Image (cartoon, rainbow, N blue to C red):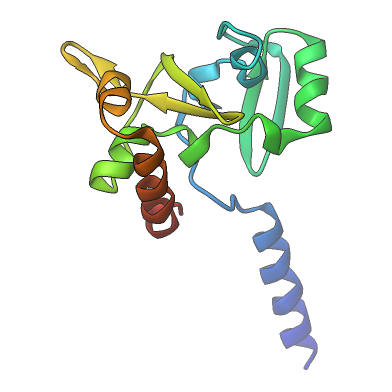
Length: 147
């Protein structure tokens, strides 16, 4: 019985530290180290290592202490949809695709990121199709691939 209790405690502790979703990280940080708060203030900027926090098992960087504090006060308000993977790819293919952190859209208060390389700017595809329908498809697909 004692061994069972120890194993149960270890197992539940491990669950508490695990990510609830798979975040798109590059060099160990969400959104290639860009400051998620800055997107909502009009221009994305890279974060600095001295303003770092961990949320949901993922490191986030911020350009200033003020942005770090804003995030810490309400992290879910700033999190990118679909873990920071390309919203268009999640919607159309149900796949996790890397993004260009400078190719984004704020829609209904949420941050959507997109792949953009060469002639493949998926934000343009997203906007030329029906973004609201694509959001619905991406939401459905994300439930299947989020971990």
